[in-house]
Length: 384
Image 1 (cartoon, rainbow, N blue to C red):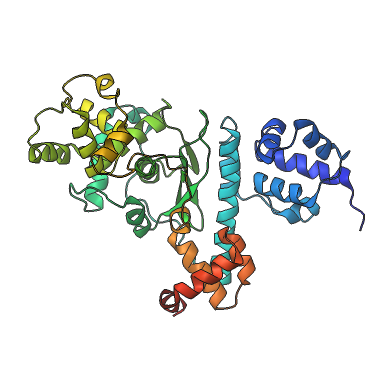
Image 2: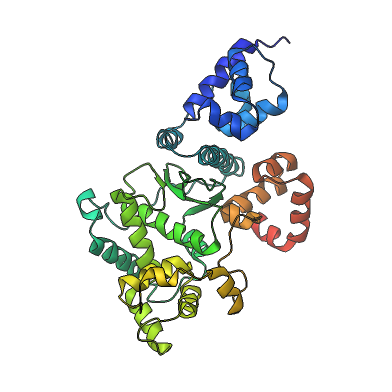
């Protein structure tokens, strides 16, 4: 069959524009020149199969749609796309990757005849914008959330598992580390419920903070279909979510109690900050901010920023506690637990081929076979 490359080019251009990615950004991500991409889109240059597949993944569209099969963009996908105009190319690619995973998860629910969870009833009413910039609003919101979940003052040592137990879908996605990269996002999905995606290019402690940040949007901005999160941005939504996360992870009463148990009236040494950060499961920098808000620092924040927190953490026996999180992450930290459960079930029940499920998970056929063999007992429980 002869391919009409002019029509294919038009479809490529439309897919790119719908994903809010410029020619320069797309060319940079797939490692071709902008001139070459322009020729693909104008039909003047043949597109090889590998490049076509990479572009479909980057734009978050099925490969078949580039060959003329009609596909409809869901409202939730459109909401994500509309918010991505000014973010980095890596973050746009990350959003496309997330969209692909969400569609895969929808397919797993359908193929395994598993009922969709749907959107749960929110425990709190959405907050008015006029209240978001008041610090007291974030403090009270964090206290209400802890009370709602019956958490007391205990540190949340595994926030991801806790949130998944509450029905949230958690994805860890490579959104990049450029200045305008997003730290994560919140999405209200009509079938899957609330979704939080966090940027993989962060330390483990920052990942936890990003989860708490996303939780703020889930609990108090659930009237919005999608919110892209940025650390350091000063709009009311992000300021509220940052303060909520800080007080949710480090309640004032818990901090005062911990300082008292350590025999510390005011923090004077960076090592004390490291100990506190490790106890609450947050980064060194976030611990500094909270201590400053509580007027517990004997000196300015700048005095405590002169040290290398990762080096001091290792010296104190905390291994690589504050190291970068850009390394390899296992599937269990990249995808929601239900994603893996349904994927295994689809293979065991012959609903989908092993190759198709491996593709959904982003692993090789061999690795999926190994997982099916080594987790035999767990898989039997899933199958039943």
